[in-house]
Length: 313
Image (cartoon, rainbow, N blue to C red; front, top):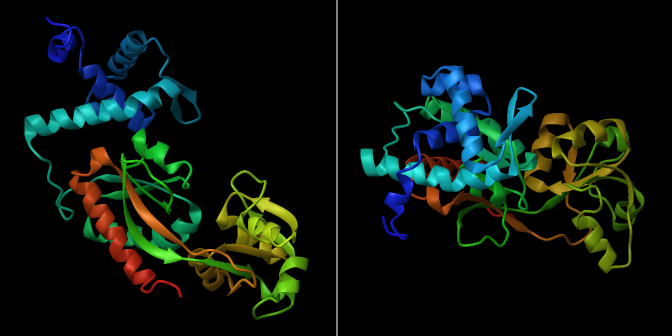
């Protein structure tokens, strides 16, 4: 064996352990992993013990409902998954995906403003075309989605555009902008807000870290501040908060219009200049040839074209 002989270096390892590892990463549960691999739970536990010794790391710790991967497991997941996928293609050829006859679990990463617009119709669209498939969503935003794609926790992300590295491929789905949202019953008024009203009225802020939002950046540039009476990390909480509070919220228009129609709220144009942005579907370069990923991205693009047919002016 020569030092640069990768095949020779693998002879001392049981590659079946990597199959167990990849399945544990997907299922996060020993029982379900055993069922998926047609193994006993004892055999899966033994394989996990060998994996822990091999990588000198616990890899998984106990968590409510199953097991939580360690940081080392997350780092290992993407290269292990890519290696197994390459081996599968080398042995069985390029995989095929016939939506009508094949079933899969599509794992997406989206923030709940995008979920509000796309997810209800996406579930219907996917399950109508592929009855044995399902759609699972993880919470994600433009700062976290790349990590979820790189570790294989999701196959596709949908989020506002940002500067992605060469490993992340993307397809623009639609353009959006911001809107003000309020409950006309709680606020006692209808119609667009004046600039003075916007600054003086109480605000419900949507912020991942509870510190500030894009509205604060815009107002700061004009030496203005707003009165923030609450903050939430979840767009879906806003309609509940506005129904009980005479306040306003500023959020992406694609979500504001969904909430306005569903909860009897009103979405109006902000009286301050807020930027437009695009929302894109993202996937890791290693999944570019996966027919399931290509099909799902196509479904998302068709759905976005139907739900947001024209870029906002």
